[in-house]
Image 1 (cartoon, one colour):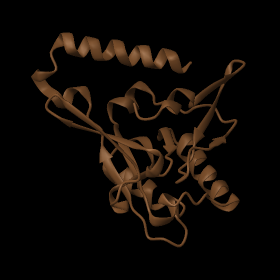
Image 2: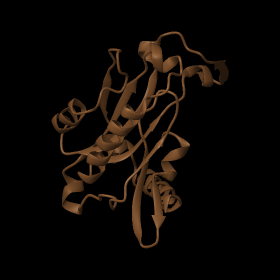
Image 3: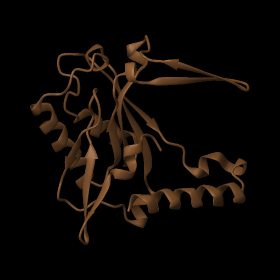
Image 4: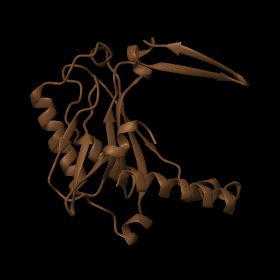
Length: 192
């Protein structure tokens, strides 16, 4: 899973689960809470859905650490609430600028750590969502409704399907599948 805050996406207030999720922010995560119950997919919906990572690409301003306005926070919070209420949004966070990041370069057994900032802004990520949708077309329709995340700057949302266990075919042996399911259950238990 991406980010340590994923475990914080669900807060438990009494018997009602309340959604709290970070919005896209180019300077860091912030939380937009709603009092709406978390939308969960029914078993029949889950069989007909796919997960998509929506990558919010960085811009010059996001890399400069310029914080969002109250208006943008409000608009993004409303959009996130629509996603949650529709049962689409599973997770999401904003990322600090790359100046606060590190890269670990892997070459065989050698590991090299490189401190940020990283040069190519157009290749960097300012945030992400994980959505559960029926098709890539549905994901595109939701992305088209997104408020302008980087006002005054052209930016991109990149949509990428997430691999499901069945995508790996026979390479994912029953033992590997069981281990993956055990790990996912362990992560899910920590969220509650």
